[in-house]
Length: 601
Image (tube, rainbow, N blue to C red; front, side, top):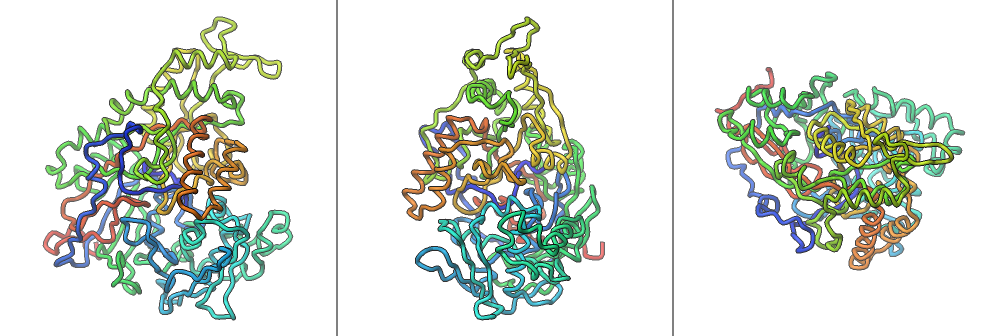
């Protein structure tokens, strides 16, 4: 998994603004200008050509924009599939019409949004993109049997999507309740080709009304047939099914080895901001082991890599120029956390969760494992979002004695003298033993080893299970874990914690993997979503952060600095303060006399 994960996905959550250090947030950084300033474009003399070979830790989980759940899939799908509007400037949240001609017409009650689809847009196979493809995309997503719970949550109030007076270029969205971020959410979904992904037109055989619940959906055979296909490997990995209108075409996938994307020669929007593309190919090269990846970088076998081991970034790649590489370490809006399965009796007591947080020595881990390339955090809102960030959450220091006190208050004692805390639960003695579930990110394993050592000293036994990325995702989605370490990449529009903390999202493959449940938090998230006044909404958000902090819904760890190395032959390499990634490889270019790869290679 990419450290600037997780998702985990896709359309998620939170926001970022220009870097701002609060006097109370304990996140002062002397290099903040590295993150906030975007360099000017450098396209004088730019030419088309060369490839970018990008190392990833694992295959994308999917390239289907409706069902994908991981950051790598999201990053590359955005080169293939496009949105109605997006923050194309990449330095703020101003939405730029893309597939849409203009921002939508919105009714005063905030329940209806009408988009005019830009005429002349074609998919890479030459077929026109119309409102029918927009409707198809939303019908696919809203089908409750489709593996798209993470996508549905962001617009669960959607009632209908329809053509206006049969015009294939005017689409009207109707929602059931006001949502301040409706325009962002409706605009954010990537439009797929109905002809490629639903050749039988099964989605035309059901309505949005039938998507409301599983019982209703099961009555329509077309919905089940479509979902079975759309959830299949064919619909998630086959280039013939994944046809978009974007600047790149998904070409080929060799599992565990390579994923290939080629430049779309007939792309419709090359004159727009971020429309022009220079590399002829974008290629994922899968190298699971970071040490092997570092060797590959030194051997000039890869052009771009996120270094998952901070030690390699600081030491092994200390002088990248000797390998014709450069380094960059911008802050990226994300947070790393430890999550707990609160259906497990070990973790359903807030005193226990506080104790576990007190047993994480974040300062030690950041200094010794992250090599200083991170700042500690107390909640899920990016510390640079000065409108929404709550600066009044005190830093939680490493305090084993406080942890012991809280564990004792929660009833955990070593009753039999075996060195392990235990407690009688429902008439049975339960030892405090559990397993951390991890993916193959080595620095996370090192982190948990440090944490597990601290736990052992107070009588808690923690083991580690490491899984390949796709298996890890399936396990956490099904709540088949005790505790996990992960990260959330923040989305490119205002914050909304609903996806990962609302109790409704602990069901039906939602992203509340730890089954956190709080009536107060739920009510705040609902109030936040329906508030259109920005100042009032920010106040609600700060209240919510306090509730999540008091409940220790996660053990919030840190926001890392990115750790990139890239080939020095590339020009126009710019680092952005907005997701989904800090870079935009399609705008990188190479002078003709420095080109390494040719299309025929």
